[in-house]
Image 1: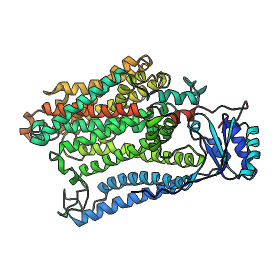
Image 2: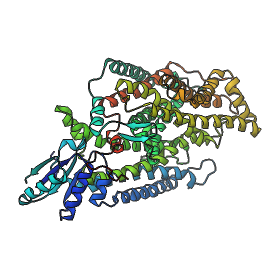
Image 3: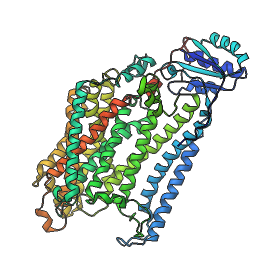
Image 4: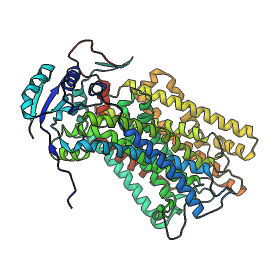
Length: 176
Length: 451
């Protein structure tokens, strides 16, 4: 069976590799101010300075967590109440629909579905960008900081000069 | 050089961290194979015992009325408890932004997953007809029956399976960037496998943006979960009317005990592991000092809970309650009662001394005492209460573990050890990405702002 893997289009542009975090964030800022919006920054661990330079807002993944958690809670109560009424068994003289014990089930399902929804959110939000094949270097998971600028071939030489001036230790070109 | 805490600095660069952690995945030494061989051997003993139980039934396991919960439930509670320290360190201390958790949390989280996997086997072994264990789940069936959600045993099914699922997701999610780091250094067929497992992780700003948030929410979900799981386990006991079980103190008492026993297991695992994997410069005295302080804290809560149990038994004026608690230290199984009190309440008090907290040999010995003591705690709670309930005929019975009990107990250690050892060999046991997050990246300019 062939999996329906979407064809990944190679994005042309310039990939710069930095050793210094401040050099990288300065380069990001000047690229953004000169109108380059299509940037990809690679770091080995999450970095607040990169986040600030890129102007990122809070990830919308929290909406997935909230909706998942609420769904789990509702599902927990709905399931227990419905099942208790569908097959009523009287135990310990307690009401058929006794909410306090059902809270435990609803609580566990809140956590369970909330966690699944969070991961689903990350997958959905990241997949949109994964369709495009962007130049990468294995040293970015080690100690280098990578900045990729999507650009046409005729802009590449000017961008390379600008990135080298900003402190990039290595610049490569990616063609479509 | 990054100063993390007054007595804790990291001198490594990002490249050093990657190199040192990936070095742990290289060909292991003879000690590792010996340990793995031992674990697999124990597991096979458990497997054979289980085979006999499947053929003949639970009669081999010393299940005689009134003791219908015996060593299997003892060991079930023991393993669930072990898991709790891992989630405390990986999720709760993450929310508290504790810097020392980063070096140890991967190992403890793996311990959690494998301990809960081990624990999950025991209710299934315990039910007798193991092949119909799925009757516990609410699914449409031709008998038109649904499980009774007023029963604490059903809460347990939901709590344990949720705990196993969420802590597994949390472990795997945390591993993704580290697997990518291993992928980028690996060669040959290993590179192919780690590439598949890294799920296309490259560490782009978009990926980190969603990842960091999601990790925070997973930690926030795991925190109440871990507190709820052992509370639910304690309610298996506390919602009955058996003397010695029917106590409102049970939920916090069990949670503190769980974390206490879990950190005991963390110490037992990490002290040899850091030496075997040459991680002495990453998992330092500072980390063990903090782990020991957590042990001391939870040990003190346990001390208080034990005292309270005896006080309430006396103060309640309930003869059955009083007899149960009298029988714990002075009944025929007095040795188990004292093992529990000495190993848990008293041995942990040694950790007031800094000299002992930073002496790894002493800590290792104490951790073994904790493991034994916490197993006996559950043994005492189960055996002493079931043989001292309201029926006089129960009073002359005693819990007597058989070869089938010891076989499964040994097998559970093998099953757990096997997974833990294989994990330590295959995946980074120290979180590369989170250690790097603590080390500031080099700057070109002096005096750059840091926030």
